[in-house]
Length: 180
Image 1 (cartoon, one colour):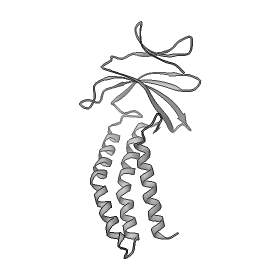
Image 2 (tube, one colour):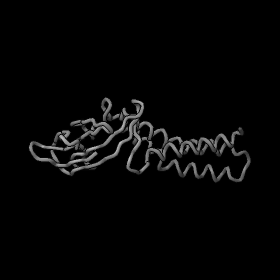
Image 3 (cartoon, rainbow, N blue to C red):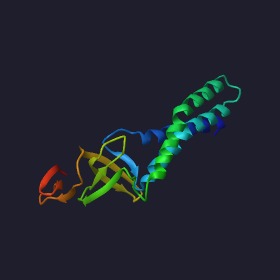
Image 4 (tube, rainbow, N blue to C red):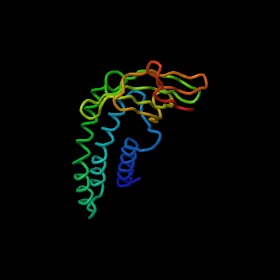
């Protein structure tokens, strides 16, 4: 395998890794240990311009060399600060969870684990509740699907109803019912 094809492979892998961190969809891949999500995002954001530089260096005396190096410099302008901010957020995480999401309750069903979080992002979002449906994969990764959120809600609890529904409750009031 030539150095150019290896460099193209590095660029492709770094783009795929970064794409996974921004993947929109019903199920989001995440690490079980929350700081790893931020470190993975930081590392994948920084490797894109780095792998483009490696590709530019591998293109010996090619007219594409300067174009690839210019693209690497242009990609570095937004991606390196983005990666540094993600690394900073990873440092803020205490233990296995980020401080902006405090786990209030957890209920397991035969298919999923439902977790209720109290969100408080400070200046970027108001406090509220978020219910997530999660599937654990090999103990270190999980698929997460946000299923319900409420703006400016006080802490609540989760319970499993007799018919198998997951309910978000505060006192005697049912705030949300999630069917399996």
